[in-house]
Image (cartoon, rainbow, N blue to C red; front, side, top):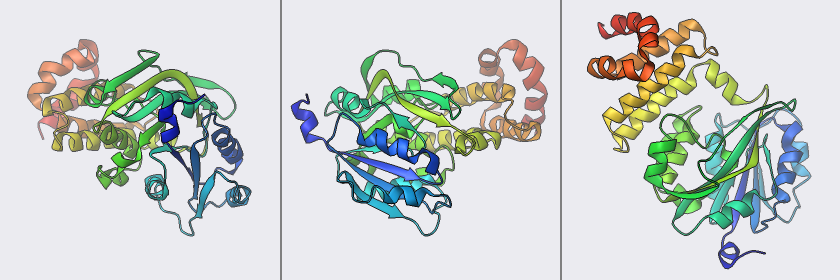
Amino acid sequence: MVNSQEKLLKVSVVIPNYNHASFLQQRIKSVLDQTYQNLEVIILDDCSSDSSRDILELYREHPKVSYIVLNEVNSGTTFKQWQKGIELARGEWIWIAESDDWCEPTLLETLIKGIDESCSIAFCQSLVVHNNGDIFWNTRADRFNQILAGDDFIANKMLLGNAIINASMCIFKKDCYYKISPYFTSYKFCGDWLFWIEIALQGKVYSSGKILNYFRKHDKDVSGGAYAKGLFYSEHIKLLDYLESKRVITNYKKQEVLAERLKHLIVDKRIDQNLAINLRALFFKKISPAFFYSKSRYILGEKLFLKLMYPYSLHYLKK
């Protein structure tokens, strides 16, 4: 049974697809089978070369499907597809349901019930699953249900890492989209991270402790390649610079986060060693010498600082 607020809230579900034919039917079915049915579905295909279009045509006449848009030229980034879907949306809330994920039928019902009028974004927890069925890990919440001030959420959950690891695990208020900068589209990997931060700045954040979303990892997903190329680290620097320029964080806070991220970079085995050295140089250039020597020993730990950091830091700080 739905409450009066739920009856007022329509959710536009945007499904951006590129070459995920083998996952599409499970994805679309998990959306259409939601217990919360005040929704429309917008499906976008970014010029797939597999059989995606044949599968999408099966849903052309479905009463819940408002649009199926087939690109003739690849857009080059999923974030441009996000923009297109949001601009077509007629709902008050948006759900970007990635085409290679799936979810529990109660995802929307849980999030809609959890929000109030002050919320700009709401999310549940995700289970990260390999395509062969192996479970990797899952996100966790501090409490089963909570509403946080947007700035507190950003300060505690969104600076060192992205608590909303997957677009499919959250919904956001459409009106907030028109108040954010299009700068997030300039990122290849971390654009969603900035997107959630700018949405969260406009209201409160509802978090459900329930695992309702399944984030699929497979050979074609973009995150594996992005980590190998170091994009997570280089774009994290870009993100922090932007947040400082907008006075969301201070320079001191930025340097704290950079030092913590540098600690992770040192032990990250996914990145080529030569590339890792160049990435470290980027971090050293952003961290002031005074902060590095006074605080990094504490953040990194004395042993790690002396063994791994000192030769690199001394070299680059003298340049």
